[in-house]
Image (cartoon, rainbow, N blue to C red; front, side):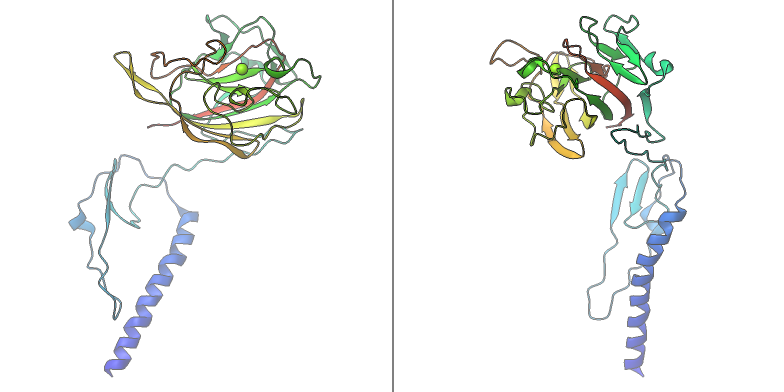
Length: 302
Ligand code: MG
């Protein structure tokens, strides 16, 4: 009789564990979004005595402290993250869609061009043609009206199909985060230059892990995860970090910058310059007609 009872309890517990896994799967589909600021719970209100499997030590209930309160591990009442609609990927011919919670910076419309100005706040002189934004020699950098700190940034670009120039003079532009730190844009398809200045380099600071460039004229993309620099009293208290994926390939793996990315003469580096916590996204005019499309950003709270 005792043996039967032990076996029954064992099967029931196994069922619970199995059921847990199955339920977790179906729960994902029915997940409800709850306000992030849900009232904190006390462990005592929720804790249930843990049951031990026969012959095994009694499991210990684990808790995790979060901004929304203290929750048990695997707690169904813990606030779920917001539900968004993911975007679609671009192909060479077709432009993808941004995720539903992204701030669209340029989507090919005239309206979205108004998100950009020159560095003095005047309307941009870059060309917009067939939904594509093209840099114009001498027009200067353009930048977003809105300022951003940490973020996920998506940018698509194409260096000129007609190959002209060499090294840094070929398809040069750049994407600047916080109005300061450059992810290099360059035609690095069979174009020798110094590696810490080739396409996808953090200019002068970090060589990309691989050269994942497409041919001149072909659309490429950057997905950049950026954690911003923070300065206090003119001194840096948090250095910025970059993770960059180019054309689906990891090229900068959570790299911490140790200073600025500005050109400071041959073989010289530049120091950090104090900047506000948030700054514009900038695109560089380096004298070459580099094209951009489908630019969106998701600010991160850190
Ligand atoms: Mg550049």
